Image (cartoon, rainbow, N blue to C red; front, side, top):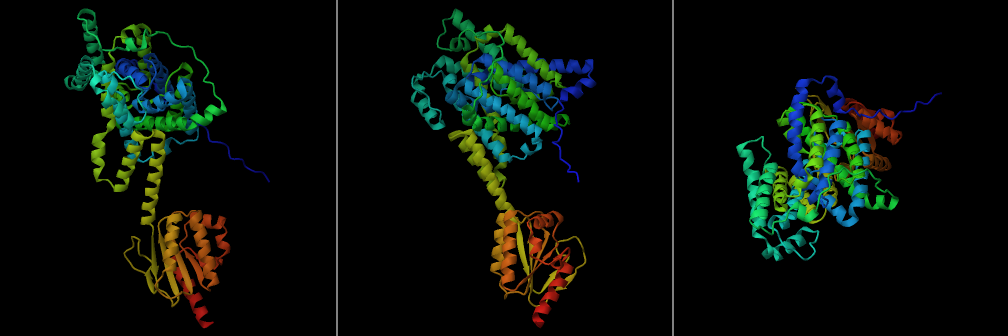
Length: 571
């Protein structure tokens, strides 16, 4: 007798670039070239700003956008996805650096990449999409508020001598105490930059507001500093010194069991956040282009990018919705556009790094303030005001925990709260009805005719409508115990509308059968669905009931129960 061993399913890894290159043409290349150049220009200020806000240098932000952006486009499952550093990672990356240093960030990012690859290998791409929307909205809004908070010193030029605490409330306490030290010139530069970013799209949608603000403001500030004696406006060069224009050599991340133990929670958060944001971006892109993302390939592509980036000192990467939409609106049709965007950033990195040092920090703060505004999703939050209160509470709790405590805790508690609310709703929708004299066999069906069944004296029917899991099992037990009529001779448990049963439901059913037998009450099961029947068989419940008392239809179950009741009456 041979035993068939079930083999592991073949990895669902098929990068979109492979199919794109099969029928590639000059016309597609022209579209991708234009889109790639535009996206590269748009990504430049964001990569620099996200790098600085995360606690690393502008060069690290650019290296992350170059390597991560290239790998996401080359190995991902979406044709137009653009990858790179995003605002969602700022809070967690900054926290990891503060606690574990750059080496700790490299280890956490590397492990996050491995987790993403495993998620793709185990085909969990579609599962990630089931994370409740209120949680996504809540932590995204919380991250947006946190990013906004971190930009206040640079935007206003605050001269803070004391250590700024990491918590939200403590941080704002320091800002308020030191607000008198604000530099007027710096604040004006930040405000002008913000106005340029806001109003540029109203003039032309094709002109990147962030890049326009950076170029114009940097030129004006340089002229004022060189020829008018302007002081107090800090630039990137003032803070970071001379920026090196050379790609670093790869180096190991230094994994060990102690670091894995300490950084696994952070790595898991990075992986989950990257998976959610990349698949959300891909879903939005599919809605615009009509394409279809291979979610598992996308996760593996994102994972490989996050494995590679820390080897060069980079920070986490994921799919970026704003840059992806810029790619689409400028004509990008294949992953080649994303590859070109990485090439454009590489050219800028190698030949224009000294110019980046001229950018005022308050201008970058304005860029990130605008990013936080766009991330906040306040219109979505307002639109959700009419949703069920449970969803609103999940959103509020996730938002507050993200802002006040930690993103990892926010996601964990938000998911737990969402699951509890979901279980409560399922339990509320699972009903138990009791019939004592008659019941309509066709009740709850589309049949127009009625088939009324008469129940013999001593026969009761308990119909379960909904999943028979731990919460509903307890409700069923309570209904049976407080049934208003006298103790029956036969209990029919009608399970035609039970889609599944869990271990608690099986246990409660077993206890009911055993206690009923001790009281001399017979049990008849009716309408058990195949997979529920299989679960009962595996738990050996069918050994407690004669096969004649397990019926596939209520008509048969009533006939059996009436006969048993009559026999008991004769005895």
